[in-house]
Image (cartoon, rainbow over all chains, first blue to last red; front, top):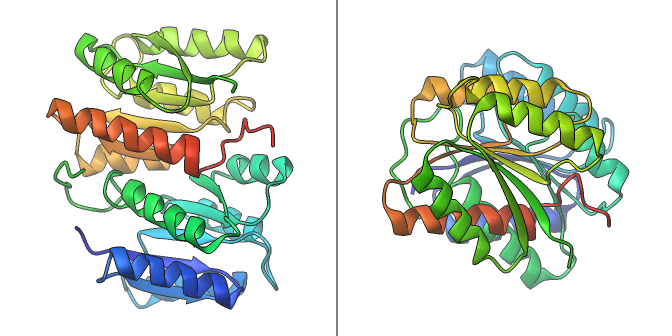
Length: 148
Length: 142
């Protein structure tokens, strides 16, 4: 499997731990970056550009974040000429249809409601990997062999 | 359970057959409409919008007669009502330029069609699982 670099913008330490563990179990070589609020997330992305580091291939983004909401981060990412192609997957506890609609309006690539139960959460992350890492062609990557 | 409405925009009869077969085997009941060129896709969507019956998900090829997939994607993502509908690009092209062009036009994801039949069907199964069981669609009524 190709190496994966992911930015998780999330303020809940438990959710970060669960996501990291599930990801590392499936993708041991994952480069897992975290930001605890929206401003940190944007600073991380700006730093990647300033220091000419590779941008993360996928952004996992919560909605309810301190300092700057996930919607504001999403709008910023999708308006930035050098970052807008990066897939942003919303991972939120919200199941409010208004939040879901708003996320898709702002060009979120997908919206996932965080399962509350640990096993289900791990299964969700596993399916997320199966789809976004093993099946989808991400922007800025070389041709992927047809894995399954 | 309400059926998921899928619009498949594809001109290759073999791919239409395989996609339909894989989706019909899915755990989630699906209703699949097929249009075989870009202009028909746009007409279908305009009509669906008028009837407030937009598809839950669009599978879109790039190389299509009349209008290509890029033009259809641009229409979907620029029109106020259709812009939310997730679009899965499904193409034989693995050109980084084509991939980047689709993400620039807000495709939700891009998948290169496997040439092997079994892998093709597995891929459709993975798409179906992610979009219908893991992700929440904008059309969700929860």
